[in-house]
Amino acid sequence: MALNERRRDEALAPSWGLLRIPPFPKVALKVLQLANKENVQLHEMSELISEDPAFASEVLTIANSLLYAPRYPASSILQAIAVLGANNLHGLCLTVGVRGYMGKNLNQPAMKAIFRHNLACALIADQVASVGFLDRDVAYTAGVMHDIGRLALAVIRPKEYSIPLGAHSGPPASILKAERELFGWDHCEAGRQLIIDWKLPKEFEAIVADHHLPRQKDGPWGMPDLVNVCCRMADTAGFPAFPGCEVTPFPELLEELPTRERNLFHTTLEPLALEIARKIEAVESV
Image (cartoon, rainbow, N blue to C red; front, side, top):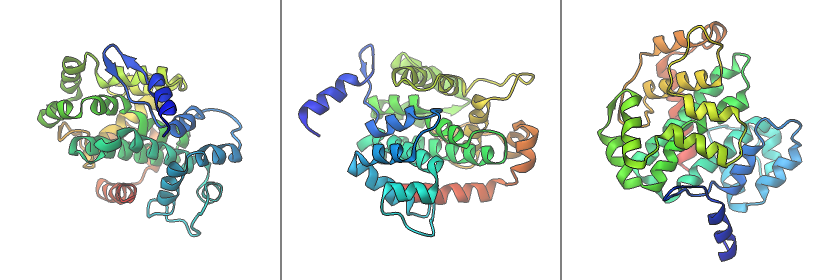
């Protein structure tokens, strides 16, 4: 990257007081901003992704992996759209973007656990949405982005942040408290601020800010509720964001889904965990 371009990206990076937040990969951020945009042309997405050859290469490698196992391997982004569909390619770009956001920290155990947790949540949300009336594209995006605030905090101070993550056990409230003591922000507040800074659709503010709040049982079901359940399903399936998090029995989590999704989401914990592990392995092997 040229020096002037790097300086421009750094200038665009959000800042919280003394905390300098790394910029999200440009292509992935533009793809994110397409969320909920009507009538996105396929050639528009293809040209956007192809702007960054390294990014496009990683997307194609994963698109041709066991994660999607296409019958006909794709050699271009336009082919990948034709083979996988626009929604799958959109989610794949976000996965690559989150990986890029973590940068050199990806191999640290605490960071890898957060990444796996986000990807597991996204995969589960996509499955649940596929049997109901929910938007699969938004569900996957919500799942993979729900803990973006946690990733941002971890990227800022990976060594310091790994200490409370490694020592934490119990419900989310205690880790949120530890984050506020360390950073002045918890990851839900940090995520909401990033969504604002990145000019993403407003519905994602509630998803990242409210995904640990208990659901109002008599209220309408929404995407934050889906992410809340899928986030805890990821924990229970063996992909927690931190080692000592409190887990909820899988049958209890199924009962929290709306009736239609619960009746059609025919899966048990073991097959679900194996399928998620296979898909995460495909992404991590790139």
